[in-house]
Image (cartoon, rainbow, N blue to C red; front, side, top):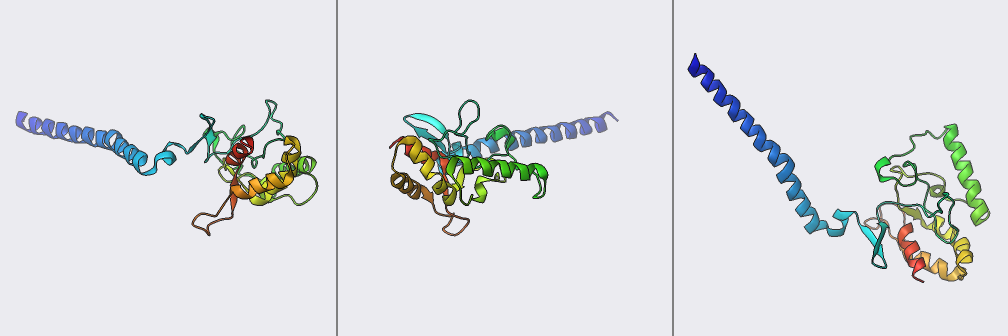
Length: 199
């Protein structure tokens, strides 16, 4: 009977040791290997595609941000991002859409409020859909070319620049669709605002 217990104990210890080795490989070794591959193969993308200006990190090219004052009011001298559904203004920890259906009264009111604010700031005219609705993640750093161009006159006036120069800056900032055909041309708002600040 003692030999049976001994064989059972050996099996138990063998299984426990295998599980421990598997846990180390699956957590520590795998994570280290993937981190090294990411750093070597993807570089800046693996680190969040951070954007610097004047030697200082000012944001990420992958996560939008607000260009507002401390009270949350849009600053007229900056191009504005699309609305965010991610908590209090592009909170990466709260990434999500609003989950409100197209007939939800709260969503309809938010769209009407946003449209009224844009018309007040940028004048009458067609308001692009991305100016009124949040992206699926709530963190999209891009806006449509149409929304960027709609903001040109306001930004130019606030900065004392010519609208022609600001429009040219927007047109130079337009990014082609992925692989040349996936999606629509977009403008990264942070990168556009950095280019604007460097004028």
